[in-house]
Image (cartoon, rainbow, N blue to C red):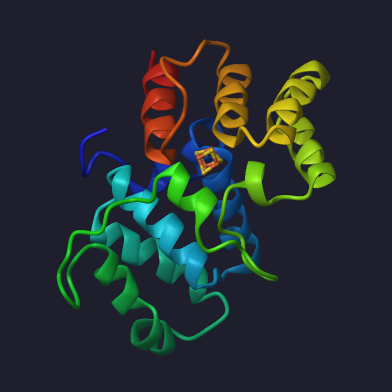
Length: 190
Ligand code: SF4
């Protein structure tokens, strides 16, 4: 998906159809808590940029959730900067790229109250099983995914999750959340 193609009103639907588990977890936590800690804002914010959400819509998106718990002034002072920063509009004006699976799996593990990271790497096995079942992965598929997890093949677990939830074979193994999204979007648009 080229930049600027995804709009705000599509996000909720896409989170259910085309997000990898890591991003669906962040989206759900944001909607439930109206807040995400720094690691989550970075991981999810850069993903949203990668799927083509514009900076203007990103600001509306984050502000709408955060201001359910805080006033707009506080949001604009404390959080808007970081969102513009993700888009290279503040600080060094670097163009920050969305995190790869390797980066998410290998660095900055989530602590208490965090929702970032890779669920295949960082979630408790029982919770992961429950989540997969809740997302309509059949029991046999859950077992297949958990076998990969047990062998520390997190990206293969994610690839299998993709295949089971899309009913197709993946073109290649998942190595980036935005690759997952792009492949899913192509399949679900057909
Ligand atoms: Fe996200 Fe990658 Fe983990 Fe899949 S393997 S859940 S895309 S970090």
